[in-house]
Image 1 (cartoon, rainbow, N blue to C red):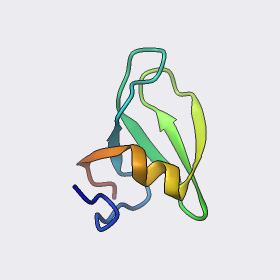
Image 2: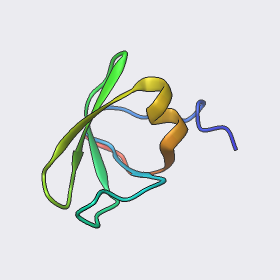
Image 3: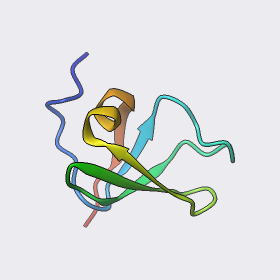
Image 4: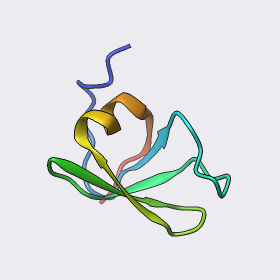
Length: 66
């Protein structure tokens, strides 16, 4: 399954392969570029992933942002 062709934008809510240690598996995209900044919707923790690593871990887009 190729995730690379999926379109994701700012403030989209996505699901990744592994959940965050807090138990939540919903992430909001806060920054796009060479690195992607994600906010855990369970505990409000921020993480940065490289675009390549993010696209590898992305399972699906749960909802589109504004």
